[in-house]
Length: 447
Image (spheres, one colour):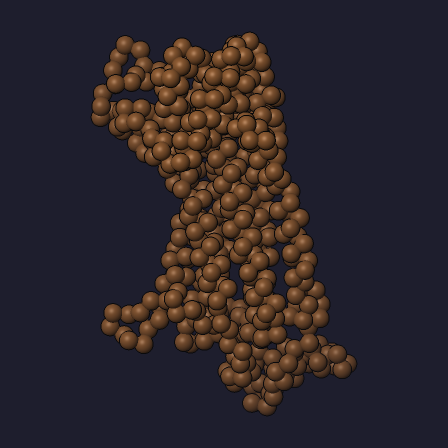
């Protein structure tokens, strides 16, 4: 049986070990490739300050690249009596290289190892999320343009209010995603700072070159203060979770609208049959289960920042084992939001809209504001026009002209989708994912 990295002469009780390790091995499999990348940068820095020879660096680099390939093939496992991914990688090196493998931990703690692993993992998953966001964003804008001339009742207080359009409805969610991307961009900036070298939170007496590992790993900068680097554990995850929850709020609201608009009492849209399910007793039913589950999944994701807050908000500075639990729902959240985004993209692309909604007389009063504005443009004071139309409605004399002539920016007749697209693209370009891709390629000897 392999001993723990920290174990000395006392053996830990099995039940205690199971309780403290929890789901860490499962979560650490997500982090495995990033643990290897962090180690590749770390050993290169160790050689530069004289703690490894050039020969040892070459040997370790070759072995770590081999482990990275094993991970990529899905063949990497954390053994039952091994605590975490860091211990497993070091054990594999030590089995192959003996004392040379033991040198890899110089100037490091598992505290800053997991910090750098998480930041590299988050950075990569944010890129995956932005790709899924972009697929939905593009689909929403396409549908906005396709149906821009189809009128749709707008509601306030769940009362029929004023004319809207499917161009506005689809486009509104696209612009909401553009704002969500801005929030994600801020979360990415906080993520993209290097904690490696902070060790257990108080630095090291070794002359570590933290600027070197920052560049090797493609970070924008480092978490400079070593105490703050450790304080960032939990904080980074909470901020990123807030960005994920912002996306979830947008998509959840879209799902709610779709469920409402698909119901027989509205009949504004028709969902593809393959995205609905039937009833076990009512043969006529086509339930919008996919959008309903989307709404619930989005609500779960919106709870994630609060969960992380409750785990971390009563901790002083320094490392505490409580932080381990943050990973359990945070790490899988990226897969969850990407699955949501891709499913909603597929549904939105196939939604069929009702082109004759306003033919229904129940919506005629939503054109009352159009009549008030017409009278105002003809010279009648607005308050007088408002009163006249109101009295006509009360007396049953109002005749709706079911046309709109909105031309200002962002209105039915001037959606500004090109401006929304430019806003989104500008934010997306600011991530500059290529920097870390080049850094990873260099560490793996692929450039």
